Length: 121
Image 1 (cartoon, rainbow, N blue to C red):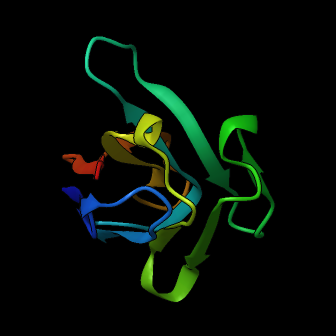
Image 2 (tube, rainbow, N blue to C red):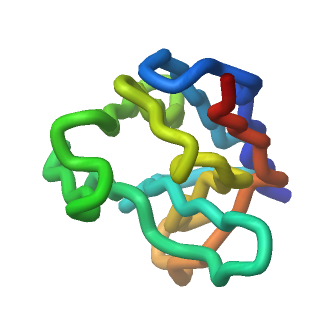
């Protein structure tokens, strides 16, 4: 069994900052790429940023220069530092991780339960 537990969401004013965390636990051999997605009301889930186990990052244009993804491989944890938040960043943010549960095993996709981020004055 693998769990992804997110934390750090909340209500923040425009221009403010939040830091999301997501820790993977359970039967884990290796964690490959980790990432953050978000889903706003009435919209489809969209990619925000990803980071490989080697530290290579990717983020979508709408968050570049404002959001930073990072990870601690020893803790199987991924972070999303969100600065200069805008009302359009309001969404449920989901953590995703590609996890191998045993040596020679397959890569499985795992999701967190989601954490609400609301940007409003």
